[in-house]
Amino acid sequence: MKTNGTFYSSDAGRFPDGEIAFNLASIRDRLSIAARRANRDPDSIQLMAVCKTFPAEAILEAYAAGQRLFGENRVQEFADKYPKLAHLGDAQFHMIGHLQSNKAAKAAEIFHAIDSLDSAKLAQRLNDAAQKLNKTLDVLIEINVGAEDAKSGLAPDSQATNCPNLRIRGLMTVPPYTDDPEGAHPYFRQLRELRDRLAARNYSAVALDILSMGMSHDFEVAIEEGSTCVRIGTAIFGERDYH
Image (cartoon, rainbow, N blue to C red; front, side):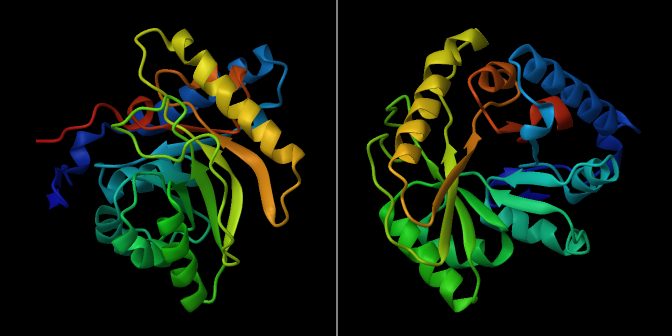
């Protein structure tokens, strides 16, 4: 199947019986160990399963294994999968990829939250869409901690716009990739310190309890630096096949 330029297989045989459940259990164990090593409560850290390019069948397997929080990168890809997932009433689906402002209305309709708010223009589009849907939409502000031109995200000193139908819950980042996960420490620390500075200002109607940072190769480092939500894809579902 081809979805929005991305190819993925709908063949359930791509996922051997029990593999996703086994991988989830392994990640949860590693998450708990990392949290205790950092003197943190493992229950204070959410595990998000990132299912971009993977079919609905993989999500259903993860759900059967107890997973409830999922992240998607593309609006149309998730819209195509959604008919097979709509009955999962207690599952949460978050948009974590770059969101074009012209797709804000559809994103506000089908996602429970937008974790990649990266511009004032997008904030206004999402706010208008949420208002029309008579809902309040949870969002995370994406911060480009590495100041990388190729990545979306607000600069660390940006301010949130006044959008009454958006509920700011925290910050998200994708740091520059480093072969050694330990190299991500300063970027994750920067996001945590930024969150602490913003929280000290006591903005009205702004909660900053979520720090979404850390992926398959560096989530344990992110936990050490205070992450409250790690986004894991490859370590749960396997390598992505884009062909």
